[in-house]
Length: 333
Ligand SMILES: NC(=O)c1ccc[n+]([C@@H]2O[C@H](COP(=O)([O-])OP(=O)(O)OC[C@H]3O[C@@H](n4cnc5c(N)ncnc54)[C@H](O)[C@@H]3O)[C@@H](O)[C@H]2O)c1
Image (cartoon, rainbow, N blue to C red; front, side, top):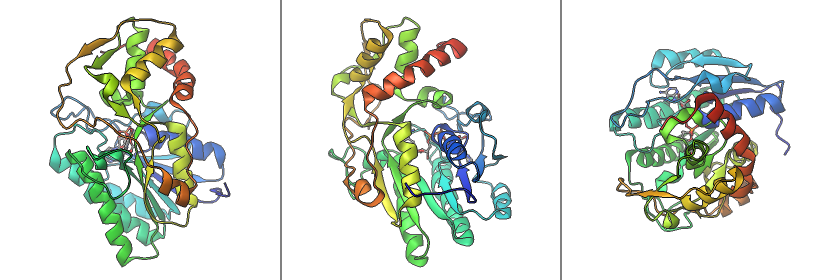
């Protein structure tokens, strides 16, 4: 990789969250001469009707980060105006309502779409590259392997991410010099996701259940619910490759294989040395994605993205952190 961020200014929105904090820490470690600015709303105790917090960022994800941190809301013009004091070379836009079950349509659309429009304007003003988080939720129940162009969102979250992709394409038509890369992450897992609570990956949730001596809880038919699980290290790498590429567009970021939730429970039990029975219960959700698998061919061609971390390797490497989380926070149910 020829990317050199020393001397460059990088804004990471949502930098106190799972993926954003991993990006901030990696860039600071690899390029100590980079100016990295994290902008995040942080948690404020407010929740959606489904009981999940509205924002999931935590200072505890940033304890090892020594760059600049701004607390602000991307929906608030006064907070966004603070960013006018900087001249960013790159914007890594991760801030969003990331809860796929969020039920407040207005807030999801404002946060994920309107605010993205404002950040695209900021990118145009500073001549910054815009690398932003799209999502595999744009594909809904469309057939695997999912490719860009097959969008069929089946919740407001997936719809908002598709609207972001459409908006980026429209703005680029008016501003051909603006580079935008949308990364459609599939199911991401790894260190830094604890503060997502009930929206953290099943790797963490099942790991904590098993460490607590509880039978791993899975939906009935979980051996047939297949997802593309991608490790956080591959996701960070995809962002760095997106910063390097001359291309604009929308790209899948998955591992390229589908695995079942039962596979996750089995791998965890092997790693943790347990043989607990599975506790199956009915899936309460309609519109549940039953099969995702990224077609990464476009991402490989234009970004050079080749995922490296298999589910087995990713879980094995994650287990010490899951143990640490269990010791520190216990099992929250
Ligand atoms: N984790 C996944 O599996 C996954 C999959 C597909 C897409 N994504 C997308 O990737 C991005 C990062 O996801 P994540 O898993 O790190 O989620 P996360 O919830 O941990 O991170 C999102 C961050 O955005 C912040 N934020 C929310 N609303 C904000 C606002 N109004 N103003 C400022 N900050 C705000 C939150 O505090 C949080 O720190 C999101 O855009 C998400 O939609 C994630």
